[in-house]
Every structure is written in structure tokens, then in C-alpha cells.
Length: 179
Image (cartoon, rainbow, N blue to C red; front, side, top):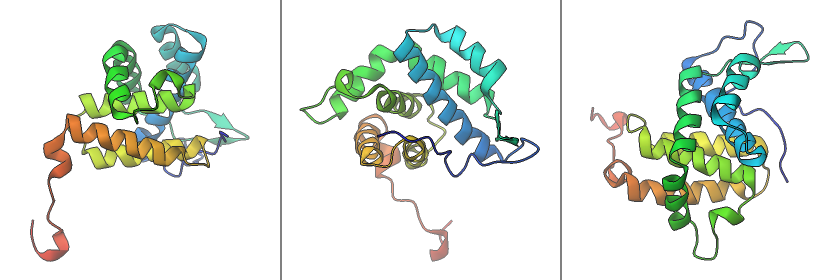
């Protein structure tokens, strides 16, 4: 059952500012919410983007202003996942277990998978393990059950297909004296 906690990196602050990492985390969370709205209501991408950019990013709840999302990353994820939805969905169908299809998955979880899959496909400047961790955190913001493990498994399978060199590379540990 979904719940609505704010993920750890999003945080509260009176000024509404936050680190670049926190703003990117907030952008991913907002992108999932926007994709969910687009999927559930059949809303137009540009209409939802405008609504979020003008009214929702950097929102305030009970006097606490939350870290504003990175608007460029937010828009890139929403536009990219929506524009490439057919390709993204086909890749996700292949990454899902044989008994599952993306169309049968709950809409919020589907939105998380679409956003994560799009970033794996398009954002080669970010290591796959970082993206997986980000989307697992986003999933924890909505679910307390096994859904984070599902997101981890599906996006990990997809990362091995889309970016095998990035996933299979063992990076030296700086503590070992290798740089």
C-alpha cells in the first residue's frame, strides 16, 4: 500500500534551498509524480510540466518549505520518459519477469520504472548504481512493502543490458591507494 513520506534527501528547510543532490532527488520524485498524473489522467505532458514548474516545485506544507526540485532535470525526465514511452515500455517489459508485463503493474510503480529506465537510457553521465539508488529511494517514499526490491531488480537488469560496461566495471576503492 502506498504511503506518502518524503524521501531522506528531499528534506525541509525554511529557505527552500538545498544541495544540488537534494534538488536532483526532489526532481526525480516530482518527475515520478508528474508521470503518474500523465498516466492516470491522460493529461498532456506540457500541461503537467507547466503545472509542476509553476505551482508545485519547492512546495510548502504546514509552514515548512521543501527543497525545490532541479527544474531542468525534472523537465528532462518527464519529457524524455513521455516522448520515448514506447521504447522505454518495451525495454521494461523485457526486463520484467516473464510472468509480468508493465501494463499490469500499478500506475505509480510503472511511473517510477519509466523514469528510472529513461535515465538509464539517456543520462550516461550518471553511474547506473547511483540512478538505481535514487529510484529505490523514490520508491521508499511511496511504498513500505517489497516494491523497492522490484524497482531494484528491474532497473538492475535493464542497466546490465543498456550499460554493461558501466555496470560490470569494478571501480578501485580509494582506501586501497588506487585513484
